[in-house]
Image (cartoon, helix red, strand yellow):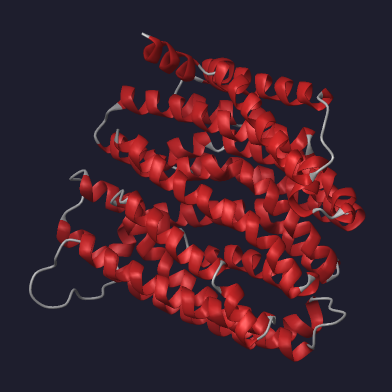
Length: 495
């Protein structure tokens, strides 16, 4: 029940934020223009790259918090570790923010390609981005503690509240001062500062008290978790390289207008990961908790059940986006040029994201065990394939080339590497996992989405949106029919 309640809260927050983003992104394009929206999209990419500077300490903090709750870590040791990491994050955030602040002139003049925006406006926006990224880095530590305590309902509410502040209220703010990138980012700085303060306050409510006096700062607690943090850091580096290299490359190869179009399509494809991302956030500390309690059978059952949950959502959404990409983009934006240039990119990225959502599950096992060497080896091999292929395909074919490489690499990882990880951590499971928990769901989703292509389609955008929702429902039901968990739940309800 704890997992279901936490997942419901996290998923509700993520669905709300995804819908908010889908509504607001076209608003930003119309309000700011494509060039300025390209700058906003670049900001989101830079946030992800700069999160690498957490050195794997955020998931480490979440895992150690889960272990503290399971009794494997004492309260004084927990407070010492949290205080040590606070010092590290403060230093890293200050250095990262300063570096980006000082590099804003170089980015504006030597990397980005603008046709209408003044250089000074871009430089000012870059400096505001630097402040946002520093605040975001600092807040991530406290977010990790809250996740480890499994206070997902509070975190979901905070994410929704501050997400609304950042994404929605910025529009009337720009209407008051003027629709410019610098005004957009100045509002983001204020919103990010408020969010960070809220995370700090709630973390200190949850953390055990250290007794009289102030908990001292010591480096020793970090040494105890250094090996795991280093593995998590390397994992993060590989993951961000895999998922964001194409976006970083294209920011320098495309004009900001074309980059804005590409970013908008990739944002639509990211909806495939909505449920699986929420599920991972809930699942990882719960698996670590079960592993600490040596509840192996419960851990395996939860792992397989969660795979089916993620598969139903990711495969259904991906197949609808892949087989109906032109219709989705037309209903969403009403822009015929964007439909013609972005449909293939959306199709390939959506299918690649579905393979990613399922292929990530063995990593959750390794996180719970605290042994990430095998995962690092597998993802390092992926990078060796991805880097040259992505650079070549992006330079030669643009967004479509990047999308094709993304799909190919993730499918190869799912088919070739997950059996190796399962053999190490859950021997004898892989064939049953693929045959019972993955392939029936994915196959039925693909067949249902493909069959719906031959349905008569309305011309209007509103009617088309209603039709897409109906198609998604049909595909969800078809994929659920391939899930043993869903069939068992339905039989239980009928009885």
